[in-house]
Image (cartoon, rainbow, N blue to C red; front, side):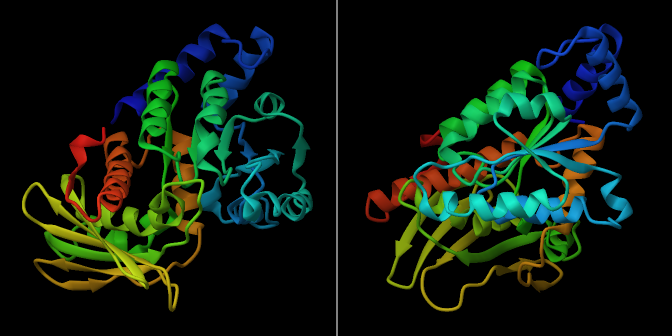
Length: 338
């Protein structure tokens, strides 16, 4: 059990005994809510950011008429709609997505503070990673367990700051791409193809000028690669062409893994993993159900399914790849970007 998991349980126990005041509520109410959280009765989820399709997808799933038992009664009850102010593809979505989630009984609130008074768990869905640190700090100070959608932040520095704050306030959180929970990816993680000797992963590489280029969309393929290869990437080298950008990573045991970001042609997600027992093609994206189950299990247990160390390495990989690009494909060691 990791540090965040112990912290979450410690926090709940202390809250139930002392009636810790959260978000301005009275000590009596706070005690009642924390006791309810321990018993599994309170399952109110709040969403920050209605500028991504993920917010709508998660709401439709959790608030459906007959949701799967695996969702364990969790419901989205409130949402704060605002996200990016300057990414057109994000803020133009807000009006339609707001109306869509309202159809599922979600209350639209005027501030994150108001949201935190109404919910016990948070999905931070804002598409703009640059403001995740600011938003996440409000959630962490209110001691609400939180899932942060991709990208966790727009820089490795901000990712580290979010984790530091989570440690300070003793609140569990995690971030992940839904590609991590492809059944085929999890087959690799469970050892079904033996020791992983190498892997190639790919995903679309959509560029957003406000973010380092892999952080915006390439993160899906990068996370797929790091999930099957495991931690321990030592250095990266980036190669650029008109149709794709490829990052070659070398692990500390000599294994090689590559990420290919597709700029032109058919936009797909997937990869190939080379194991000691078999070679496995990963297949494409199949939706958000498996990720959502992991989020619900995390809310139930406080146990983070993706370690801080692995998440930091994903962002170090992307940041080192960005440095390599700026140096015309020079090899960059991950330790140099921390």
